[in-house]
View (cartoon, one colour):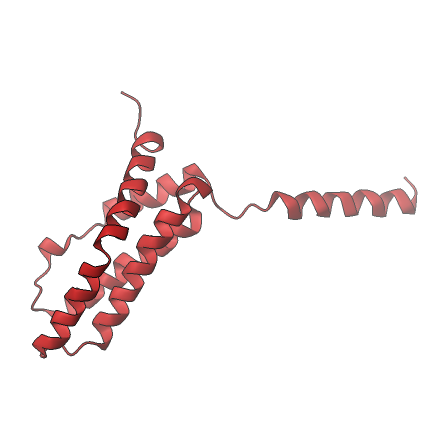
Length: 139
């Protein structure tokens, strides 16, 4: 192999590797992350809403989980996962900034969440539908 063909082959390999772009986005990675989230899921119903530290921790965990899910979600469901992740992060940040002893701060936090319900419902439906189709084992 001549020096010129060696460099040509090397450039071709580098081009193919960079174009393949294994970004970690796949159905398998998405389903695996979703399974991981489900195994550690804590619902807000299980959290004492008067315990501001527990609420903040749950919201942070929710946001982290959905950011990871959005990071591995295939294109078909990535926007929905990202919508939920952004909502979770905004809610977590609002909870961190809120004074838990101030009923007006708590009301503002609930109003923020309520304003996003339609977007979150659509995104949640998209993620749920996708995961039911592709992550649920066949009977």
